[in-house]
Amino acid sequence: MKRNHKQKAREGSPWTGLSAVIGKEMADHLTSARMRILEILIILTAAGTGYAAIQQISSTNNQDQFLFLRLFTAAREPLPAFAGFLGFLVPLVSIALVFDAINGEFNRRTISRIISQPIYRDALLLGKFLGAFFTLALVLSAIWLLIFGIGLLGIGVPPTLDELLRSVLFLVATIAYGGFWMALGLLFSTIFRQSATAALASIAVWLFFTAFWEMLVSLAVQTFLPIQFGFLEEFLAQAKLELTLSRISPNTLFAESTVGLLNPSIRSLGLLLPFELEGAILGAPLPVGQSLLLIWPHLTGLIAITIILFAFSYIVFQRREIRS
Amino acid sequence: MADLIIETKDLTKKYGDFVAVRSLNLVVKQGEIYGLLGPNGAGKTTTILMLLGLTEPTSGQVRVLGFDPTRQPLKIKSQAGYIPDQVGFYDELTAMENLIYIAKLNGIPRREAEKRINESLKKVSLTSVDGKRVGTFSRGMRQRLAVADVLIKNPKLIIMDEPTQGLDPESAREFLKLIRQLSDSGITILLSSHLLHQVQVICDRVGLFRSGEMVLEGTVNELAKKVLGGGFHISLRANGAKKNLLDELKKMSNVVDVKFIAPDHYSIVASSDLRAQAAKTIIDAGGNLYSLDVDNVSLDEIYNSFFQEVTHETQS
Image 1: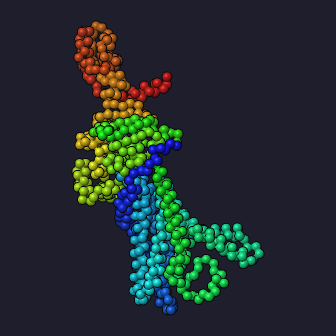
Image 2: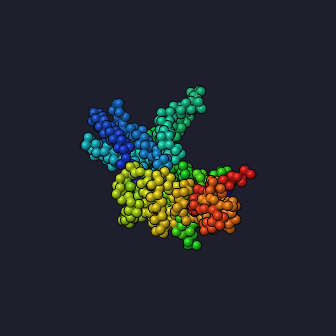
Image 3: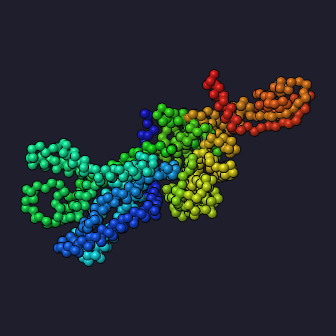
C-alpha cells in the first residue's frame, strides 16, 4: 500500500481537548444514577465491614501491634473483610463505569460530532479512561477515609506512621487494580458495538478469574506435573507452577498485594523453605519499605497489563470507521 | 489559492475491493453553497469524512481551507463545522451544556464561549429552550441545535450530511432558509443530499454522484443543458392549424425536441427561450394559441433523465 503522504507526522498535540473530555466524563459519572447505586453499595460495604472489624478487634482484645490495619483485614462471619470485599467490588465498579464508554458514543450518534471537533481520537479515548479512573480514585479515597474515620472513632487509638503508609499503599494498590478492570472494560467497549455485550464480556472475564481460574490452575498443575514418586522436588515444582499460573490472574495479584501490605509479618508471597527462615525472628514485622518491595512485582504487573490493554483499545479505536 | 475552500485531486477511497469514491476532483469556492447529490451509497458521506480527516483517503490529494486533512486535521476542524447525518446529542444534558462541552473541546475561553453560544442559539432561535434537556427536543430543533453547535467555532466552512432528511416539509423549508442565511453571512457550505428537489433551490452548484464517481457538475441550469440538451422546457397548447404543428415547431432554430403530449398539447425542449418564436409560428400556421409556459426544470428531471440515459447506454 502506498503511504507516502503519511511519512510526515500529523500536526497538533494529541492531548488537545483532553481536560475537557476528562471534565465532562467525571461530571457525567458523578451525577449519574449508576454512580448513586455504586456509592450506596460501597458505603454499605465500608460501614458494614468497618463495624464488623471493630467488633472483632474489641472482642479479641489482643496485643496486636498493628491494630489499625486489622480494620481492613478483620472479618466476622458471614461478612468477608473489607479488603476481600473490595477484591470483587472494585472490578464491578470499574466495569460499570466504562462498559459503554466508546460504544455509547456510537449508539448515541455523538461520536462523529465529537471527533469533528479539533481534537484527536487519542484525547477522547484517554479522557474516557482517565475520567472513569479519577472517579474511581475519588470514590475509593472517600471510602478509605470513611473506614479511617470509623477506625479512629471505634478503636480510639491513632494509627502509627507505619500503619498510615501501609494503608495508603493499600489504597494505591486498590486503585491500580481498578485500573486494570477499567482498561479491560474500555477495550470491550471499543470492540463491541452493543454496550450490553461489552458489559457481559467484561463480567465474563471477571467471573472466569474469580471462580474458575484456580480450578483450572490446579487441574493444569496436576496434569503437567503429576506427583509420581512423592519426592520433595516434585511437590516443590508443582507448587511453583501453581503459584506462577495463579499469578496470571489479576485477582491473585491484588489479593497478594493486600496481604503483603496489610500484614507486616508476611515475609514472602511465595514458597518459604525452612532453611530460608534461619535466623529469622518469627512473627517479627517487616518495615514498610520491605513489604512494598515484596509486592512491587505485583503492582508493576497490574500497571503493565493495564497499559497493554489500553494500547489495544487505542489500536482498535484508531482503526474504527466512524460511519455506522 | 485563497478563494478555493475545498480542492481534491484524484481522491480515491477503497474499502477492500469496493471503491467508495473514485478519482474525485472537486473544487468548492469561497462563499458557495455546493450540493453533493446522489442516491444513498454513492460515496457522498465517505467524501465528507475524507475532507474532515475522519477517514483516510486511499490515494489522491485533498486541501481543505489550505490544509491537508490527514496531517493537519486539527487546523481544519477548528475552522470547519460538520453536521452529520442524524446528528446525536447527549440527551441527558441541556442544550446549553451540550454546547459548552463543544466550546471546551474547541479550547474557547469560558467567557467568550458563553457569548458565542448565546449568539449561536439566537441565530437558530433556540434561546428560549437553552436550559431544556436535548432529549425533549424535536427532530427539527435538534437539527437547528446542530447548526448552533457548529457556529460556536465561527466556521469558514460548514459541511452538512443530509441536512433535511427526516424533517417535515415545513421544518425542511425553514432549515433551508437558515442555510441560505448562513451562506449570506459569508460561510461556505457543502451539503450532501438525495432529496434533489429540496436542495436545488439553494445550491449554487451541484455535483451528481453515482457509485463513487462524480458524473456531472455545474449549476442546475448548466446541468439541464448538458443532460436534457437544452435549458428550456416550453409547454404549449394550440389547435386549429392548417399545417402540422409538430413539424412547424420543429423547424424553429435552437429547438432540441418537440413532443406531442396530448391532442393540442405540445412540449418543446430548447436551448433558449423560444416562446415568442413559438407563438409566431403558430399564428403564422393559422392556429389558435391557448397557453404558452416555460417549465422550470427540476433536478429530479435532470437526474432521472441522466440515469435513464446511463442505464440505456449500459444496456445497449
